[in-house]
Image (cartoon, rainbow, N blue to C red):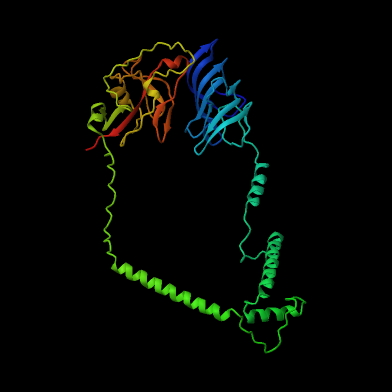
Length: 407
């Protein structure tokens, strides 16, 4: 669709969903190929999956960019919308390549948090200003910064200078009190008192005359005797301990064997996986849960009674870990003709790497594209399909994976 009042050209490549009065209404999928804006290709491109009202996005829906690096989706509470009149409006979850932001608030297409990515066309999704955020971050960073170390030059730091002066004053008073004790060595005490005479300080009543020699205290000789006897007793006890250790039989220390290594699973295709796969163009193709290709689906395409609830009975909605040596498969022409179209695979749709869902042999049009179906990827749990609602809840699907045939 071209807008004569705008230089950009928007391409709506696919819409699948409900219609009313020649306009999208109800649940649907709308894919935007992107726009040519100056030198930028694919601007505003992505896929919207959710509710429509009179041709506009309204209610609950998921918007994901073309590369999948940015996604805006509703919260878990089903009564809380995140779209209004074709604009992001309400409470949602924003996920980019680095973070997941929960409970993000939008008002008429504008986010209340400082994101910079753009949403789908006509949303007016703009970035917030950082003018108030950065000074606050700088103040917080300055507040938690520790004081510099003692050997740094901090002449212009009044807080650090006051701290040093307070500590030096307390240390000076402690040395003054300690120097008045009788057991304090003479030479340091003499030097300290002589330095304090000029300033009127020192110990009151103490005078040091030239040539004065310190007299030994009354307890000095006995004190030295006790110290010498204590040292001799310690030496005797250590010698006695050594003799006892020599007589005691020594235990021979042996090398502790290393712990047994865990047996790691062998990478590659097992015999059971090979039996439940189809070979095509040098690759093996299989469902992620390795359902046999000839298995018929055990569920029909009847509309669920819970019209707007996800079809939780589909086996593709449960997590399955990706086996070693396997990866998500692409849908080439040969894969659609030789792998997807001839076999039922126990389901109605097979979903490939690019989110495209193709009908199996039990579909209404085997091998043809039915819709876009997103899948979730968790590092611990694995892969699973996202739940569908509305008319799309009647479909059941599985993920298609592949592995290179070993020579």
